[in-house]
Image (tube, rainbow, N blue to C red; front, top):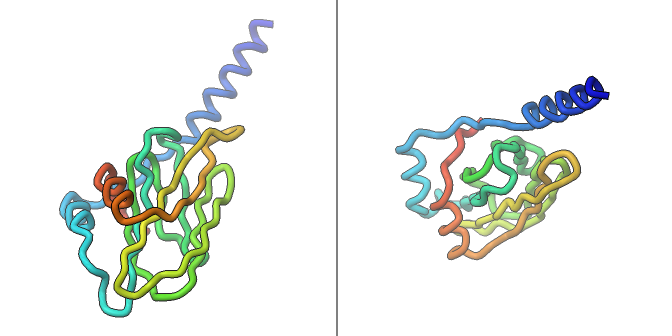
Length: 148
């Protein structure tokens, strides 16, 4: 019986450790520049994806834009990328695949909050388009991740 409890405990510990991720951060200069919220280049839009909460801890969540990897987040991190105007599909891959379809407008900055909740085995993601005020506050509480 004791052996069985030890085996179950060891399995859970290994599962929890392998589910954790660390993502490379951008330099402090790039992080500070991204938090200036400068206008995007002509004919483009800025897209910030941020995860400003502690819940989900180091569980990594891969972020795709139109089936292209744009980064991976953990708690208190954000991604900044420029996109062309038009419709896009953002996907957050955690225990689930969370999808958000949005229309980017040239010259604008769009903010997406990546909310994490407890799932069966790891964190589950939900994506929310938020207004500029909420977005700026969320991004300020985070660190920029290095782009792939």
